[in-house]
Image 1: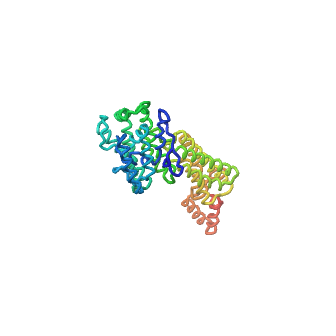
Image 2: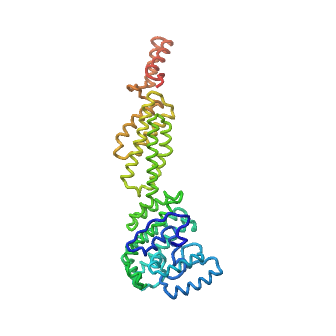
Length: 419
């Protein structure tokens, strides 16, 4: 592989195409530098350049780069910045293999080149728009083009639309077949247009794998990829972009859940609550942007596990506080756990968790204190009734009797019971 394949040891996606390993150019180009390694972008040659034209242009560039640091490449390129001497040298070497140069040709603008292919003008125009949108989106992600988030989203969306439309057009396949014949090299004749066409969607989507590894990019990128996944050529490729991230998050969720369960069983309730709040819930909520790439059954199983863990912890605290009256903060914690369990629970768990929530809510929210005793409920005396009884006692027994009656009623109805 060439020295400029991927800087910093970035993870490169596997690329599978129908054909033999000599279509390795798909793997070499994969990643965020997809267009910056393109031989037509680097050399500035037209898409139909061959033979003597390539050699003559190379000689001119070598002379120029003997006295200059960089060369700007294609004059109408959407890429920003020039190309170094070593990059230009490598690009010219790729012209020696027609199988590799054809891949680059399909991934760079064609302009007004007359290939003699007989394509409708809309095919070539759509192709160049796909390249422009895609290249600009990658330049924006690299910080070489200034673009706000909504503008980046527009570029990504435009690239998805134009590429998917092109890849599904039969005229594009016929264009590739025509170029195989026009290049007229025995090394190409062992391949069909389908071999190249099959490899293009994965190559076009390959930058997402590398971008997804960058800090803070994942949730926004997931939204972008969800849009790409709506287009048939890319629908099966995008879930694997986030597979490792999703698996790691689910693993952390289950590790945290088991740790919280162990703390709960040891009656270390504060530690169990902290684990659920600080580890399990943030990881579970972090899955939301990636829902489009998680099988429904997998997400539901994870939601079930988290909801049950929250519910069980809330019930354990409910039982604990039957014997040890809770503080206001402890009441709040139990209610929050029950509410979160109900919010997360998949449909199959809703009824059971809702029943527990109702009991907890009744005991820990009414009048700001527990309203249900260990045995059976006791109703609180309404203020109107309480005042009426105190007044009647005063009329019958006088002021002293009224005071005694007031205190007795408070004790009888639980206001001074410590409940």
